[in-house]
Picture (cartoon, rainbow, N blue to C red):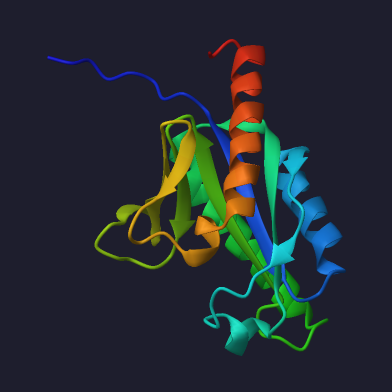
Length: 182
């Protein structure tokens, strides 16, 4: 019989997208107050792979990723998603922007073999975590590269996203070595 093992801590990566550039520093500051310093950040790119968010967020959205220095245990993903939802609500309730949802903060976890996203929406390929939060393996790492699944969102198929996640994976390996975990 196999014995359960403690999980390896994961790299927290939060996708931030908005149409208001001035929200980006606010988002980073608020996220750092919860999760510690950002260790790696992507360049923002045009988030135009879907019109799903236009009704609540407007058009001409830009998206970027923040990877945090502090590694987190995977069982915190639901808690982290609830915290990012609360930050979104905080900004929306301030009514400083015309959109109902001026920012979207999507947390995920990167480990050596995969990249996971948290979501509030259930689908056949998602696993319920707790408190209305689900997780999906969005990308798998195989043969030296991130690979999509049939359900992977279009923006997570982009070369710039894969390039950033590859950098984040190397950063994660370094953090594991520093913490004595790999």
